[in-house]
Image (cartoon, rainbow, N blue to C red; front, side):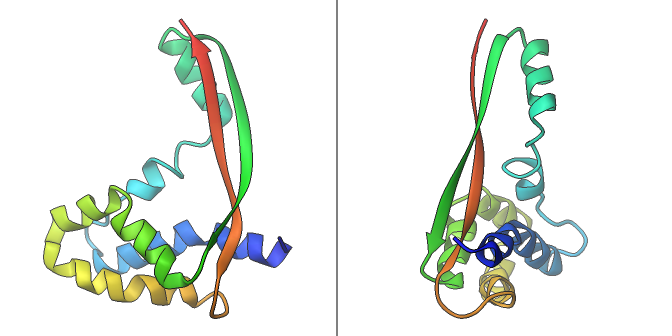
Length: 129
């Protein structure tokens, strides 16, 4: 995977967040910033586990490649495959179509036509009480 592809993929969550904010200027859904992308600090996760009574937490960061055939497919995953959709519809279900139009354009604006490829990471936690 090229460095350019990796860099472009890192912008996806930011592209999605910015597109959602453009549609919901006064009260944007913050699911992406809070949950999958906002809780990433391994030291904080380890501290939270200790506070919750877990000992010997092992945290392993796994890196994988991710590829979608197009920006529209990425938009589909973010809009239909995550709780972000519930937050959008809970604010104004009528604006979902606006987001559905803007999101693929926002994602495609930073990259060429065709597949969207890049790096994804996840922290895998194993802990015992």
